[in-house]
Amino acid sequence: MLEKRDALIDTTEHDSLQTADAKHLLHPWADLSTLGDENALMIQHAKGVHVYDSKGKQYLDAIGGMWCVTLGYGHEELIEAMASQARKMAYYTPFGDVSSAPSAQLAEMLAVLTPGDLNRAHFTTCGSTAIDSAVRIAHYYYAAQGRDSKRHVLSRRNAYHGSTYLAASLSGKAADRTLFQYESEFVHHLSSPQYDPDIAKESAASRLQTLLDEMEAEIARLGADNIACFVAEPILASGGVLVPPQGYQAATREICRKHDILYISDEVVTGFGRLGHFFASEAHFDIVPDMIISAKGITSGYQPLGVVMISDRICDAISAGAPEEKPVFSNGYTYSGHPIVCATAIKNIEIMKRDGICQHVREVGPYFIEQLRTLIDSDIVYTVRGDHLMACVECWTGDEVGPTAKNMALAQRVDQYCEQDGLLVRPYENLCIMSPPLIVERSDIDRIIATLGSALTRAQNDLRAGLLH
Image 1 (cartoon, rainbow, N blue to C red):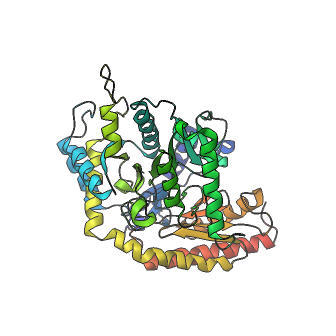
Image 2 (cartoon, rainbow, N blue to C red):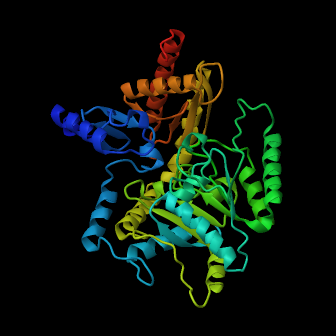
Image 3 (cartoon, helix red, strand yellow):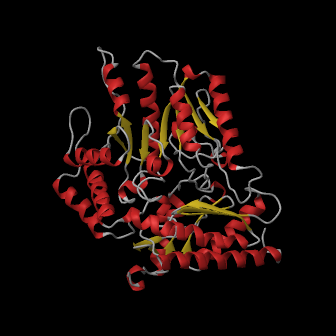
């Protein structure tokens, strides 16, 4: 374990870092109303499932660094894989007919892990760029067949697919729609598909049929001949760990197949072990998509990497239909298939297989959800939902449901008490979202539940005392 003295820096340096951060950094999803006045939590060291701030305080990281850090922090084998490849060759261009051993080896490994005929990898830099690339591939696929009209894209409200222009346009979280511009001419959002049996006023079968009827109606409105693809997270992660009714993924896949619409499964979060499988699409949801997106856990967060896994059928078609005068696949990135990044992903996969990480998740994941559900008795918990090692506790004051000002203030208070007691959860709107490293043990889960339970009780007392504003 990392000793507290190893994490400490002197007070002067700590203050200097916070000042530099407030003055010079624009953080992702920063609160612009406090820009320049922030006192950021300065994380300086990390080991296993714990992170340490610049004053040496230890926190159990129940968000895995934002869905990413699956094998835990400070994993020496991953660090050595990065260093070894850097010593051998840090970088060379991936464009055209130039490659590197790590990118070729990783592509082959992924072809084995993915279902069906998803045998070709297109490497990107993150999930956002992978989503962009997948949609562009769908457009190219139909254009190569002379079907240029198939360009519209179906997504869903409450989805999150990234923050590049197209990925942000595909995302359907209302809170993320600010003063930026978004594509609206060919991107269309279906209803959020969540179904929570604890609070639902209809059966799962009824909810499922409503969602499917809506999808069919939207396809009829736009015309199937005008729709290229449907982009879908199996579980809507950043939207609040929203779990669709059972059978939704398979049923929407069948609708797409019937109407010749490509199905793109966004497994940036659900892939690489979070649901107990390298890829959840087939193993957990009984579908074989046309493309699968992966990022985050593919390197355990140690390096930035995204990938689109593409079916042979699509690749064969875009190759056969490429125009003779310009048969170029003009999509990719300077760091596509970066050797150090790919070497890290290779080692990550090797460790996951050797150490039985997916099996471990299948064992502790149900325990995590079961223990979280004991918190539903709290008066300020509206519902608890999740699957294996992705979960959400939704807070409310007992009045209106959803991200009202009071509900969000209450969730922020829960988060503050968790942080005080050495637990990091992800506060978003009125939600406490959790995605601990996949190496989490039952004892760690017990600590998460006890700390979160205490925070809920203290926040509830504050609510009753009128201390929330």
